[in-house]
Length: 333
Image (cartoon, rainbow, N blue to C red; front, side, top):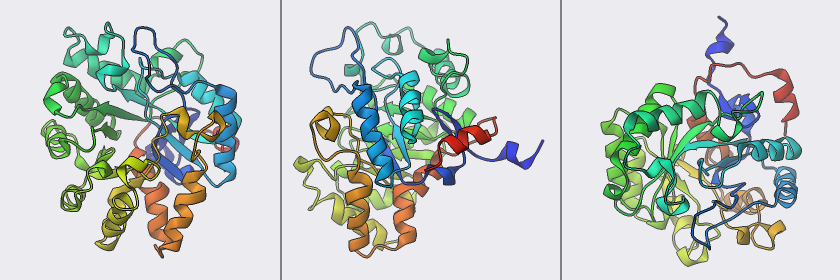
């Protein structure tokens, strides 16, 4: 077996790639959310393939290389369409397995049934990571997940404990990262403690939306423990980004913790996509956030960490396959 067979890779919707090949990467967003029967009206939807693909092309032309899609199965994900959009746009997309908040599923969703045990949930996550997303398993080449995304309510005890443990156990077994949705950063410490209790390494954990709780001491403590923090309120005015996330980011850089932060946009709403009639659009990641960091005098090596290297390193794991030359060539940015 060659060294290439042991090389940690990132599993994208088109196949495995080297971490360095991701380029500029939005560390937490959404590219496709289709309607789900039995869910309440008013939930975020993104399902105009032509317009989304056109905006992904604009993202690539602005300098973007990859996107990390955080929509799990059963609540609007479509791996086949994500692969089609990736191939058409040249933007690498990393899909996830896992579970979202209960509100995004119909009442009869199996993942939230009391009869869904630890073993069934863990097997499901591993299946999607190693075989393929369930909605693509009928294809000759299924789309594989590249990480686990789970969601916590404001109180971690409102989430079925077996689902959290299943994610941790699956993560340990496969070596993948876990991104955790939080409600404005609530229970971040408890989330980290719970996952670590199940043997999951904090160095593979991402706490999402934690900039909505701009407690610098908390952020520094988590980062020093090995947790990666995801900041995404740059375009959410109600969270006052000029007063909160930007100063917070500068402080984290100043104390040498930039390697524990990833920058994202979390564009789950059509109102944030330019081609869908909203703002700022996907190009803002490369076209606005990047220049802002440069204007602030942030070192180029730190910018690369925040906007690609950190998330790429987290996503890298032993995928069990070697990247094909065809896949790599088709997706060069």
